[in-house]
Length: 295
Image (cartoon, rainbow, N blue to C red; front, side, top):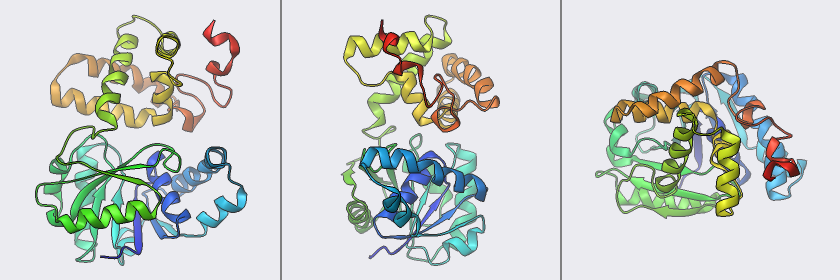
């Protein structure tokens, strides 16, 4: 199947980047988002980071934006001719369930439906859809144009041709497609990363050390370019909060609730990471940029 019409559902940190990347590679992209103004702000916020990462200019950014043909909260109109829908709504099973149950009756019969979820595997969500053979996950990394991996995994009923169609699409948008042989929470990318981030946040939540100290220790000791709390700022606290809340529901481990309770006041104050200008650090002049940070 040739994929021509692409819809991104949910224009958060990654959803907006996926839409932009598909558009800069020549696809005509439609975005569905409950709040149009938020989607527009996310796309505008991409500009500086994209140009920095890719040594690009305003013309490169503008050319990509020209291929984003609509941003709408009208679901029926947005998905009417979709060949591929990439869902990137909040990491909440209730929100995803509501989305799938509303969107599936509106999709063309042959439309491929995917999720960018980092928390759930396809089997967790496929029951909310009407097309198990045409449902899979396609997971991307932040700064998609630079960290260009697309992790692809189906549910037990996914048609192998659909997986191949997604591999072909991934290559068309300049991704390196990585097809998993079986479902795995966290895929490959997050399977080792999430335990690291959880361990760092547990140190913070339990009062062992503050985030800057934890980052400093990790970076110096391991030669890492980023500390775990720097990564959390990039991911965004809304996503992190959803992930640890789900982990608490799934495991009952109190540490996840403790972490969520520490994050909630920061989110309520509007401090959600790089996107808001403040998270564990203040941006654009983050504390770790100070030469004295590592002394």
